[in-house]
Image 1 (cartoon, rainbow, N blue to C red):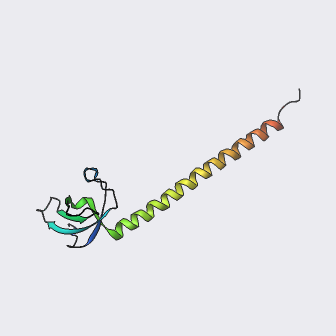
Image 2 (image 1 turned 30 degrees about the vertical axis):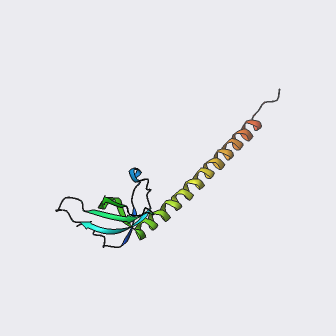
Image 3 (image 1 turned 60 degrees about the vertical axis):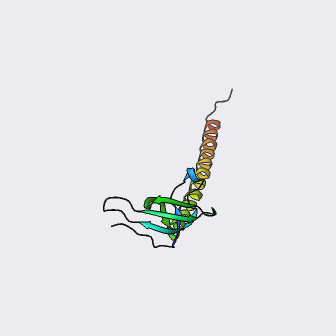
Length: 112
């Protein structure tokens, strides 16, 4: 089943459109819907993007509802935080292992 976005609803780009210098997450308004036969992707005309008098046509797969984009951004932000914490944890574990190894070597070092 195809998801149809209502006319005049706001959507976010699901990916960058370098040919228009637009980035994922840029918001626009749907001004036209082009239904396609079953098995083909619908198209949409979008306006906005702070580009006056410019209409961009995109396939349905390149737009997502604003709420979905915001949810995805929240998830990505949490993943970035977790990734940074994981790096800190790895650094700390490396520090502890090196400390333990140096203490172990100093205990068993024979006097000369």
